Amino acid sequence: MNTRYIIGGLIVVVFIIWGAVAFMKTTIQYVSIAEAKTAIYNVQVIGKIDFDAVNYNTDESRLEFAIYDAESDEPNSAERMGVVYYGVVPGNFDQATSVVLIGKPEDSSFVADKMLVKCPSKYQGEGEEDYQDMRKHDEAQKSGV
Image (cartoon, rainbow, N blue to C red; front, side, top):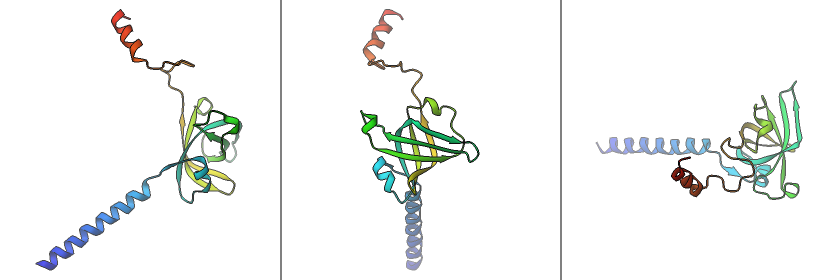
């Protein structure tokens, strides 16, 4: 009877360890552009697109572009990274404010397996400082607008 509990407990422990390892393999962490350049496994990196460096080869379905640090105030001095993406260019790529890339570096560029394009919200006005100001919302509700 004791042996059954030990074997059953070992089976449970093995499955818990197996599940934890499988979970860790599927999680992909966000890293900075500097860390993405030196990664040895798939990572996620976010950056703004340098539209002056975009080149699409239709024969190879190869999109080449550069990204720079999304947090940088000065795009010209921000850290940059060349990106290669194989596949169809997303329809809203030219309107993107930034992209999230999943991939890893190969040779001199970052090869993205997946690309998520971030576009500006249709509810956010261009150049408006007080986006979603709740005081203005409350005032409009009170005045019946």
